[in-house]
Image 1 (spheres, rainbow, N blue to C red):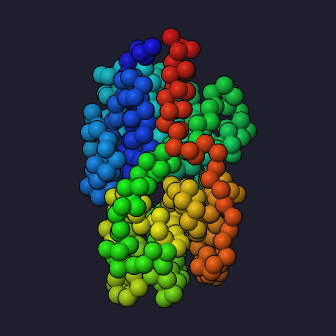
Image 2 (cartoon, protein in one colour):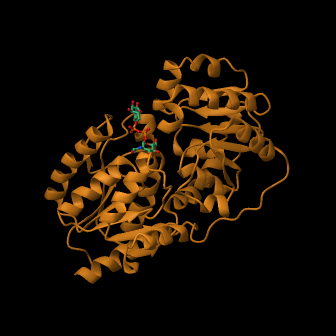
Length: 370
Ligand code: UD1
């Protein structure tokens, strides 16, 4: 049965694109009208367009071009833009993904227009309220009619917050659909070779969290230990625009660029990045998604944060939360570089079929309201 009106999935920033791509494909396969709306929170080609091309996503039917700004400015601009879009397109349901400012902004607008909201990746909690994403996650989940979760810990968090059981559907991790779908293509590319690196003989670093890169003392401390690790294992560092700006202003860029074992590169496309991470010895990151991707790939990951909203990657996967203490980072890197392998397994329902389950859950939800 066709819902009364289209289903809209809202994307804004880089980590949203790999979640929306399989969802769009699954709605298309089911013959249900589905469109992607891009708020333009990320706007550089390297942070946005390359993913649409790489992941075979259709052009968004609307692009709001909100760009950067303070949190309030960015969130407000997304809200103003989306209100017009929702009024004009009259969606049967708005699907939001992840935890960026666009996610929360879309949920608020839809809820106030009394349009049902589904949240893909609901229930994750770091319990660290200094993280903008934690605010986005909690607000989005309060407003969502359908809470689509990736793992059992997420269900438990939602139930503990008093969310009704019937709103929660565990669907698995949709980002892993994209990973499995593209792994073969990624293996056909040899990005390590292009960078003159041997498979299994390098690390990949990504950093962009304000808590790591906006404070000079912290960023210098992290840089020192990462450059020390680079003495023993070459490192590839695709640099996020926020991070590059801070490296420049803290005088760190020359140190990184001048190191013979460091490859400082622009942000990479999805397939190129996967080509790199899937053959790495070790990943050091403060990203959320990369903690999950390394767990799915069985690649050791050190998370340079004090906490994670994705504890399953530590309990079952390859992730170790090391914070920003240089001694801890050094010790855990040593362990990961040794031959002794931690046992890990890919969590249940991270099986490449999450997008189909999302379509099933949203369709069932809309039938109950028809
Ligand atoms: C955002 C998300 C974060 C996600 C990350 C992935 C929020 C609160 N944060 O953080 O959860 O992990 O995306 O990348 O939504 N910039 C550019 N070009 C771009 C985008 C950003 O130059 O295409 C620069 C701007 O100077 C901007 C800064 O990077 O001020 C930060 O961008 P912003 O979207 O505010 O947050 P991210 O750090 O990217």
